Image (cartoon, rainbow, N blue to C red; front, side):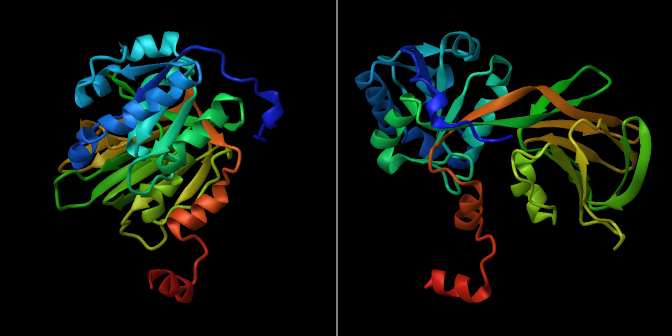
Length: 309
């Protein structure tokens, strides 16, 4: 999918703009300290003619009662933009909730890696107004839809992982594509990843990096017992079914946020979701530069040693 030129985007009309800072157990202290950054973003928005609105949970976390707040439904129906202030986990969490409303999201990095949240808070007063003026690149990210026979349904922006849970024994899994058996294997588990998630857990398990505009999913075994087991990339119009053929215990994890217990014979079905996530990047955003800068892509051992010094 080619980038649209900046000239094709008019300025964002005056409207409510939501600010979201999602707390997490690992970063609780950081989120509690985010009152000042959140309020600074609200002031920048007000100075440029926009009504800053706090996502409901964010308002509660930072203890702000002076800025208007909205729940997820209100943001989806009223706001023209969402600013996710935090780390990649914050953006992913907000994106899943708002995907059905097709509201664009801008990520401002206040976390550790910041692979998806590509605006720097250090110069937010300069970069955010540019985006509001229409100087941005829009990118649409595919989501996975995960469902069970019992009707439980979740969206995943990164991945769905089926693994052995707390058991120390391997699990036997079977993969079907478009209702036809493809293969089975014994392993610690399997990762079914979107292109977005290809640089997350799937990458650490030996999966391929997939550019975000490539319409594909990757299926990556976790510590497979057979040397012949390798990751496979499939088109994103494929319907994937993972069946637990044999296991003492098994769990399905959706983006590491939602969990479903599985037993022998249980299956989880995965397909491309109808919803997509709209991300707005600054004009100088370069995915391959991000790979080099954030993940050390293509670095030699010598280069890494110099950088470490």
